[in-house]
Amino acid sequence: FPSSASYSFQNTGLFVSLGRFTPRYFILFDAIIKEIASLISLSDLSLLVYRNAIDFCVLILYPVTLPNSWMSSNSFLVESLGFSRYSTMSSANRDSFTSSFQIWIPFIYFTSLIAVARTSKTVEE
Image (tube, rainbow, N blue to C red):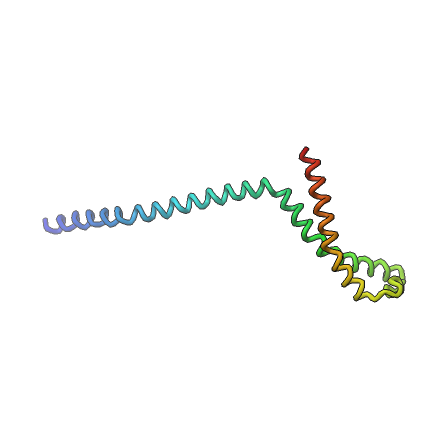
């Protein structure tokens, strides 16, 4: 008989201890669910601006890669035709040409930004 009394006391103690920790885990679970919901809504928002973000990334990355791709394609074309790339640039030094071209990148970028803004405004109307 005393063993059954201690057994029921142990079970009661177990339920009391579970009762203490359950709200903490429930709050943690609730916070995780709310975080997942906010991430889903954030992904929905990012999908809404996906097209504009792609245009913006292309607008940023294209002027940076333009000189390198232009120089590599130009030298490939010139060398494949059998000409020397130094003779095609006349008396201009190749280093000074690329450094002056780097100065023009912000102006090219700004005019590209204006062009994209005008075309996107026309498409929306």
